[in-house]
Image (cartoon, helix red, strand yellow):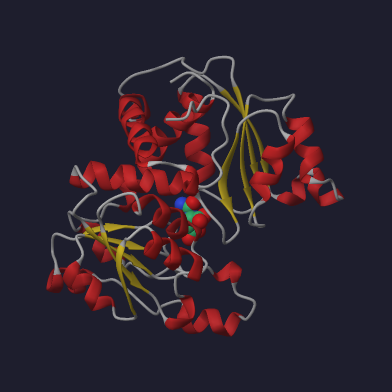
Length: 309
Ligand code: NCD
């Protein structure tokens, strides 16, 4: 297993099963601190830069909460318009400068590959907090952490990925992680929003059992975990096309109760109509627990790349 101290977190393709399980185990140790039952000064005197050039609520706040609760400090840039990127500064130059101010950089950017570009210049660990329609590795790690907490296992589960599988970066990163486990995947999307070909190839190469369908009821019948996603409006060049798909699937309490009342329902959030509020009352509605798990998972990652766990 690699030594995480000083390393970047850019893509879930970089992780082995052993490393995924190790991160989950470390995250579990941080749960009492994340859930406000214990205090910690583990990252005292460490500074994290949160460079968010795209909208975010959960990812930025949970990273900031993680850092603050471990006694560290945070510098934030929110919105490209509030940084020198708006003046034409390159990511390379930004990385060179920010490395001298902080110990770790967490970055979200609309262009796939940009966290990697920053990691090439900055001499501190860079964590990808979402790069356009590319990847979102820390979300996917908190997703597998959540599946483990809800089910005590990942092996043996049938997991449905539903919605915008083309542009949804969380399902891309999650797919690479789940490929290490003995899962069956059901990929539910409209034809136009199917999982990218390279990820389908990855499933085939790694002998991951999967089926593709447009029919949500297939997932509701067979899956133990349903991972729903928002149609990614900001990635559509044609707004009419987005309008056509935005409510293609709407999960309701009635549907869940009809097919599988015990279904675990996950979503990276924000939801914009694809999960009806009535679903929240079901015991399997795990999306707010999932968001809460993000703090412990991000504590683990920060502590690991800073050489403290
Ligand atoms: C996701 C994202 O930014 O990709 N949100 C998140 O980080 N929890 C999902 C989304 O925006 O649809």
